[in-house]
Amino acid sequence: MKVENRQKILTGIIQAVNSPLRHYMFFESPKRFCKYVKPGQTVLDLGCGGGYFLVDLAKRVGANGTVYAVDIEELCIGLARKRFQSTQN
Ligand SMILES: C[S@@+](CC[C@H](N)C(=O)[O-])C[C@H]1O[C@@H](n2cnc3c(N)ncnc32)[C@H](O)[C@@H]1O
Image (cartoon, rainbow, N blue to C red; front, side, top):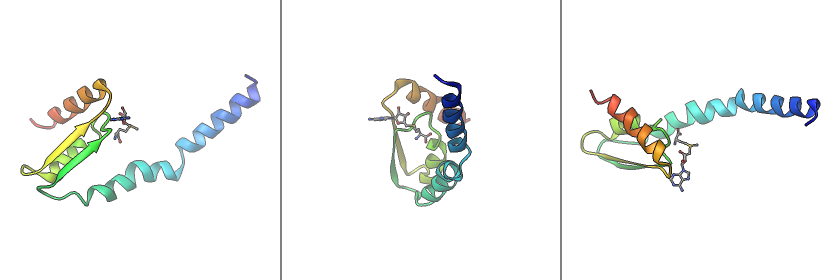
């Protein structure tokens, strides 16, 4: 690959990584979404990955609620379980 092309691609990636949209997607939007989760509700975290939202969702639904965390990757389920368990002590 030509050096100029590599630089263009790299520049594009860095701009995307630093964009305000990414900040919104990862920090603002989830917080706004999570506020609708109330005590006692049942929530499906589909594609839970490493459980980024799992702990917060579990706190919000409380002892009378349920969170189903589902992922196609077994590795992710293990990471999500570990992350959740580490907050339970
Ligand atoms: C971009 S990650 C998001 C993980 C997590 N929700 C987060 O925000 O940190 C998308 C996740 O969806 C999972 N995934 C993709 N297709 C899926 C499917 N058909 N069923 C369940 N999980 C799926 C992937 O394995 C991956 O962990």
